[in-house]
Length: 250
Image (cartoon, rainbow, N blue to C red):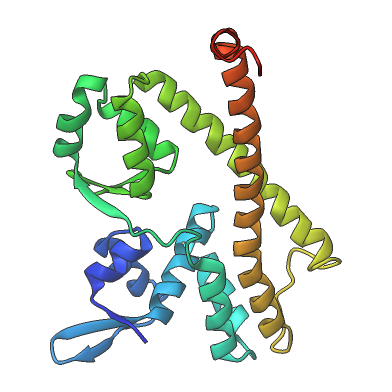
């Protein structure tokens, strides 16, 4: 099992060291293992921390989260519970977050019109989170790289932000659609207060772990087909006469 210092734990979970301390003080996160002066956290801590962050994002209070976790664990096998926690809370992307100084980010992109208002817009999109007053955590370095490439290709910042917001809305709708399918067909007939029993936990964990690659495969396959069709139509519309001129036999 992996071991993390508190700064590594916070970075992997996408939060701050200060928040980790707060969750420990509120008894939401178990204490770390002590080895002399070094405090070490495990994968179980990381999974629990991601659950806490997810519940906070959905509007739960500290008291509600503590009660939920206590109720969930009561009478259930802790190993099964942690396995389910890890499956449900692990990010759907394996790319690590990247910590960047806000001043460096503004300096790099200022000629494209990036300012503090744009940074705030990217935070609302979920692409960045603030890490103190002087740094941001880039949630997806791959998306940041794509943004760099598109800006360099001549796409204006306003158009790029509009596309990002549209894609975010559509992917949110896709995610909600997949979860409705799970509600209707995988765990049908369960009320909102239901929690899995010890016998149900392993099966639910397996089903949840299978949902990730299946959902990603479906979206990737359809996007590839849609891009292929759209690109073919675009080429015909934009360059069809040119192709006919040079290749009349086609």
